[in-house]
Length: 134
Ligand code: ZN
Image (cartoon, rainbow, N blue to C red; front, top):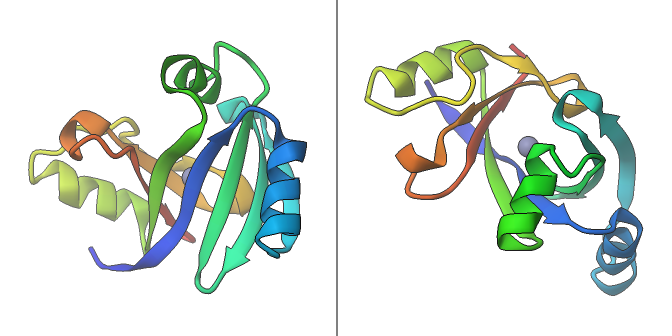
């Protein structure tokens, strides 16, 4: 397994429109895509910052993962996503080193990429995602 870069940083927001306004108007970043990911009960907005993206996440369902996160912790940084060549291989590689997985297998995330999550109990409290084309 080889991590090439930070693919994106996921940030939980209460209101996507307000959050987009901040990233665009205050920070001067360009929102290049807005996408709803029904599977994760979120609406996402993307900003490119070098090789890395900022992924804003607004919950579409209070029972969804972002809805629950905001209820517990409030808005803020939600997860860190590393770019890998092959998500299934990367998940197996860390599992073999004792990391607990949320996703045993890759699934489809935003932008058509494959994703898989590691459990924050195994990653020093940082919800960690692998993200890749394979
Ligand atoms: Zn993500």
